[in-house]
Image 1 (cartoon, one colour):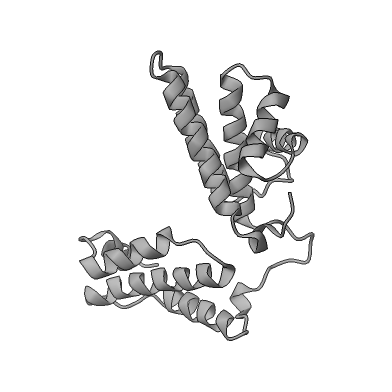
Image 2: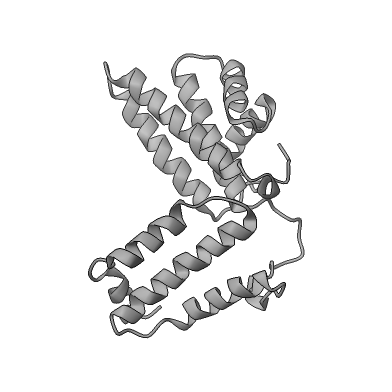
Length: 204
């Protein structure tokens, strides 16, 4: 993306129609096909953002929109094919959900709950995984093992929510409510990501 492209993205406020399209696309969760369609809508709204300001639409954006539309026609563009021939990893959304559940576990442990008790409560609320697996995910994230993909939104999410957890520790009267809010948010985020059974593949 050129410097001019970035300037267009930063400049001004989206008009009402594009703003609503972006909000709708970002807020939508559904089947894989519906999610893909919402992603295409989001990218098309971004393309219109460039066009409305008299800027050329970046070729990368055109290519990605076309590639997503081709998937609905049963065609996979070369740049969307998985790279490498190693062991297949779980989708990024699954790792993001696991990170959210780790935060939920750490939040309950801040209440003084034993790790095993807290883990059972978290997986029961999320409807995913087992207490033993959740404790294992916590170890994997803490040690940054090779089992956790090095790139992905899960690391940013984990860092952000752990910072919030640390902030909660500095509170006094507001601490219980702040911890509960963080716990509820982490569980809700994980459940939203895992709501599509096709995405999680039914695995726990």
